[in-house]
Length: 136
Length: 164
Image (cartoon, rainbow over all chains, first blue to last red; front, side, top):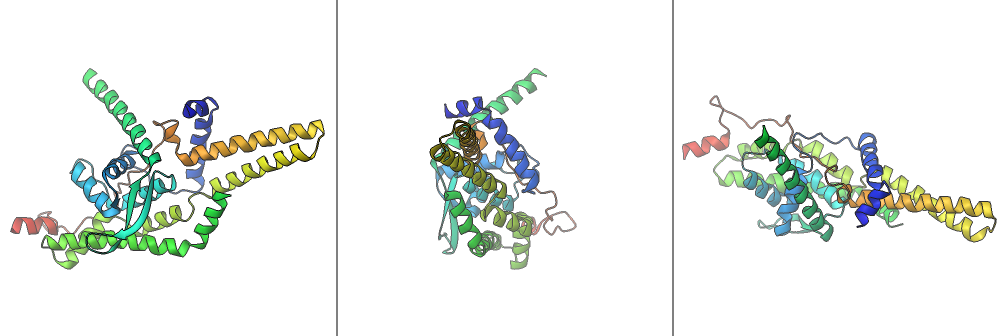
């Protein structure tokens, strides 16, 4: 409801413009080779099961996507930091299985909502693509 | 106020963030190296494989530090301007009873209020409002150096597996 109210005020348009401006002016982030948001979705889904350190997240994602998607391990970390910045995940230092200090990430309530929204969106997009492929 | 305090704290603690990022990235590469080593690779090959798999460490480190130490100066500036506008509007409204000044105060309060809402929406993540527009990086990097291949195109990991 809040979302549609803000949309009616044109906030989402302004926010998108702000995003572009921010990226152009301040963020020299690397461009993507895959559909945007995919990595975030994979991370959110992985963390929905349990809290985990970056290495653990990377391993699970690799195991899940096998060779279909080639995810560079390091790309995980800027995504994790950005997601933490947005409040989708929180982090705290703890001890790993090999008794080393590691940073563990955990999904927040906002993150769970985000996961639901992104999953819905992903399903919508993939259904649409499948429909197009089946039609042609 | 919360954002300003957060920014100051982060700026002051930038070296802490740097060392935390270093520790986190080192943990990842070291653990990956250990895992490769347990599979039978030499220490050097394991390290090389782990680093190749990780990607450009320096670029990732820089990006993490930048995000961790207060992502966007623009957001901070906008937040401050909107907050100031809201406060000045409130003061004008409260202290000066003249009609035209009151109107200026109203406009300033409206700009400040809407601006803060906008920045809040931005920080909460736009995808809440427009899920199909927001996005981020899946950082595949075509510049990633390949692990050391032999003449048959096998990585050290492949060689160990085939030897087994």
